[in-house]
Image 1 (cartoon, rainbow over the protein chains, first blue to last red):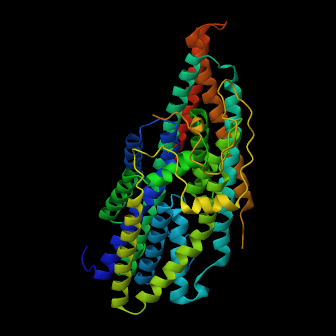
Image 2 (cartoon, each protein chain N blue to C red):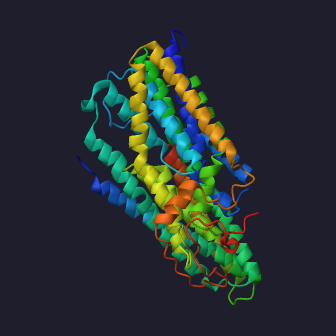
Length: 419
Length: 72
């Protein structure tokens, strides 16, 4: 650990902060549906996810060879550029968390890298084709693939269950589905720890290599692996409750069979995509799976206003993180005082977002309560048409007749009975 | 720009088949157990239980394979 300059130390700390935001941003992927269907208590769910993320961080020794997957030319990447990229990614992660929208942490990192690299070395440092194949196309494909799989799986499970009508049997099957859901959620957590903690390890290792501390091509030191694993686990345990609420009960109302179908679809898509060579975002797969499961139940309704906000956030992730990354790189280019200014701005920005979040805190106690209509929600609800809901009574459960206005928190019967 | 449509298609196909198969199996297992528990249906409860456990075993195998994929 010798010869670590101040700049390098700042980059390492910032990378760990990004890892931390990545953890609490993505808790929802594994645990949102598990919490909303009541399979696990909120605190238990995040604790389990945190442990599995930590385990996942240590599982694989295969370090991501490139942190950006070829989107930018990483040769001669300066340490300041990595720092600027991380600042963009962290601020976007915090902002989307504040408004409770699931968005891909990897895309935020890519955006930050693109912005910082362009500001540093011009447009030629970006591989435009790779941006399309690695970011844009997967963003469209992931929710579609996971959604269709979850939709069909939900339809199938309700079909198999159609003869189960008496109360005792319904209770028994719901218990079974909750158990199955915990297993799927565990797989998602484990895969997340392996992938995303690795990403941070890759960044820190790259920074150490560019800083001349490590020889090129070396594996991350143990302290890097341990700290990255701990940062993502702590972030996960803190729980991004705002995003969990959106994913677990904001997009649609999930019953245990749907939650199981959604989580299984997400786990399958994530594992299949990372092993068949077409990487799909965890967040986008999970959101798609939740929506697919919502549509698969007869009478199920997806709240398209919330979904639209989420899609908008996905579209904005790359340019927004890129702009912040570019701005940060513009400042760091000015010399050491620029780096200091960016560091101060990062702390101030994060602090401001945290203070804003304290106004209407969401934590494990109110995570399953309906989302109050915020300013953005009401504005969008005013301009977007109401969702077309088909209200067909399914099985023996009653479906509330009128479709509520988008995001209207009223209509208590529609809530899943979460205790 | 080189979009790997074959990889995308195989991700789609594999995800679809595996998800539906797993959820279907698990549902069959759960429904089998539920029916057997209430014991009002005709047919041997032992066989229903064995079938249900076979379904769960297949699901557990799939989870095991998933863990193997993550570790490997």
